[in-house]
Image (cartoon, rainbow, N blue to C red; front, top):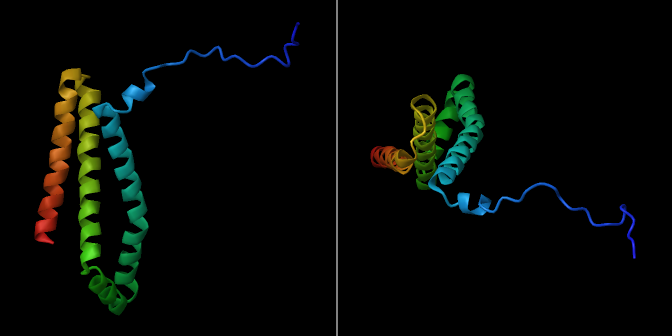
Length: 131
């Protein structure tokens, strides 16, 4: 029985790559995700920061109320996570610049990613201890 071509199931001519799922567990992919998420977190923080700056310019009493609100433990924790996101984004960007301008060295990548994570953790801990 001949099936007209319009009724035949579509067969993709695109090759299926079987290593896509394995790549998601690679340290480089995890560094990419951390860099992307930290960038989004920093972008979401900007309106809050601009709001605080506008309070400082328009109404000093409102700024005092806002600063009093920032002394709460949950806000201090959020600030610490924000500093961690900033450190992850900064150190990850420096790692990417290093890869771009020095060249890709596969044997250095896990070490570079570990150094980025250690720098971000150190910055967050220093901020938390001084906050």
